[in-house]
Amino acid sequence: MKSYKATLLEVDLLEDFLEEIRAASTEDIEVFKSIVKRAREAVEIPSREFADEFEVAPSTIDRWCRGVARPHPYVRQAVYFWIMSKVDLKIKALLGELRES
Image (tube, rainbow, N blue to C red):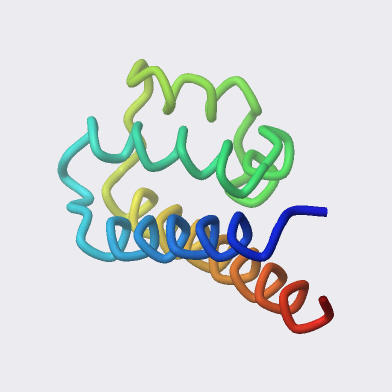
C-alpha cells in the first residue's frame, strides 16, 4: 500500500490532469494525443475498455495516441468527458483509501 503522502501526491496530480482536460481544445490534435496517452497510463485504462466505450477497435485508440487517426471534434469532446469521469473515479477511490488508513 502506498504511503499517505504518495497517495496525496497522486490525487494532486490527477486533479491537475482534470483541470488540463477541462481547459483542452478539441481542435488541437496534439493535446488530444497527449491526454489520451496520459489517461491510459494515469488511470490504467486498457485499450480494449477504451475501444469498447467508443465502439472502435483497440488499434484505433493506438492510432489516436500516435496522431495517425483523428476523431471528429465531437468524439474528442466525448472522449474528454469519459476520461474525466474515469479520473474522478480514481480520485474518489484514492481518497477512500486514505480515509480507511
